[in-house]
Image 1 (cartoon, rainbow, N blue to C red):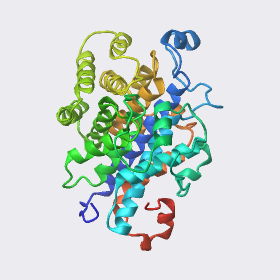
Image 2 (cartoon, rainbow, N blue to C red):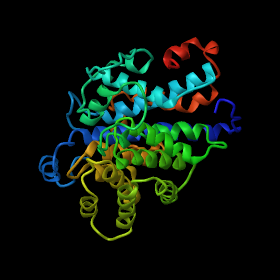
Image 3 (cartoon, rainbow, N blue to C red):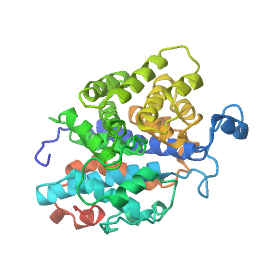
Image 4 (cartoon, rainbow, N blue to C red):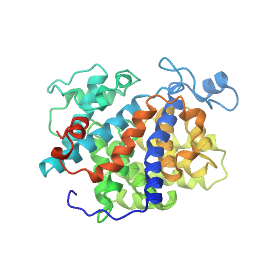
Length: 370
């Protein structure tokens, strides 16, 4: 990776792809923030409170409007883990992304006020210094328990959870590896997404969905259509044991998107999104059928289930496809940590130009390579 020669890109193309990187993470965050206010409400309760169109603007949650949840928190720490792995690679000549991502998740755990039973992570680096991230935003119990028990040897978690807490944070994987796409086998992207999700979720549907979302984002960043990106991810998914649930959920989403069923009926068929394959399928469906970014996010959060996660994944997918111009300003402007999210997206792109710790002590302090 550190020896790859990067292609020359025109300034206009680079501006375009930087915008897609930002839109992927911002889109995920606005979907998360919109859905966060109704995460534990039924569709009936949502309509009863917000009217026949459901929730279409931020509502009070976690002390304000436009507040992110654990989904965006963990997405940012996924990015940090990858970036610290990159820093280790350019500084030491060797890296281990599973260790650096696991370390990032332990820092997230500490921001939530929990301790690992075996390791005391250093709360260094730039991200963990962001005060707003030190807030409890309904963190998933599987993520908390798996990280509290983590003993320092990365691998697939020892539980049998397929909750959506693994897949909802995997989008940065696709962005990161797109930066190094020349000569890169897409299977590496899938493996990396699978690894990130598998650190906390031990059921195949809990971690294979992470690989699928990573490949979707990677392919979409390169200009693929969503159907083509789904086909690419599908072709990799079927090579792994235990893929059947995720495959069936994705195939059902594609089939329903081409049907004349009412959207809410189709989403109900796909599930509630508490488990990973359902959350991914709902997001894929909403992205496929909607005429706009706004319509897709509204569809993705107004249902019986895990509204913030389905909103976040939908926003990741459509953001990287369409860019920041499609995200409503009324959602972007009050978004919590917008500046931090944009900086992380920028770092995911510019890390291709990093050389060594000796060249930038400040950059090392931002993303220490361990």
